[in-house]
Image 1 (spheres, one colour):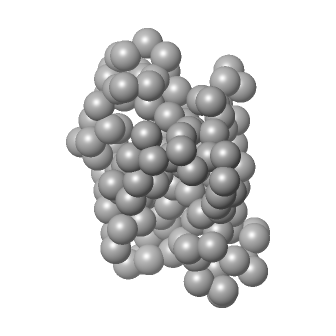
Image 2 (spheres, rainbow, N blue to C red):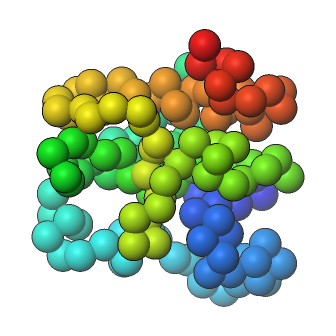
Image 3 (tube, rainbow, N blue to C red):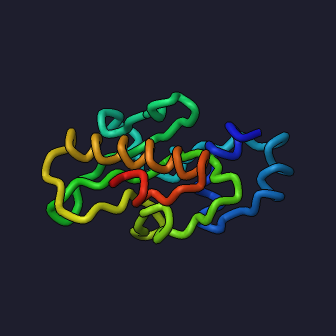
Length: 140
C-alpha cells in the first residue's frame, strides 16, 4: 500500500484526490504522472531521474528543467508521508503552476549539481518520514 500511495503522493499533496479516493480508485485505474506532462517533456527522458534514497527504502522520480536561469528538480514521484506534515515549508518544496519542485536557496546552473541537491533532499525527506525529524535538522 505504501508503494502505491507513495507513487501518487503528489496527487494527494496537490489536493487532486484524497487518500480515500485513491484507495477506491487503486483497483480500477492505473494512472501515471507522465500523462500530465507535455509531449516535449515526455520525449526528453534524459531529464528524468529515478532515485532510491540512501537506505533504499523510498523511491523518488524527478524531472529536471532549466527555468529562470537555474535548474529545478520537479518532483514527479515521492513516498507517502505517513501522516507527517506535507506543507512546502516543512518538506522544503515550492510550487510552480501546480508542479512541485525541490526548494533550494540559490541558483543552480549545472544539472548535475541539481541532481545532487535533489538526491540530498530525498535522503532528508526519507529521514523525516521515518524519524519525524525536520529536514533542516538532517540537512545541517
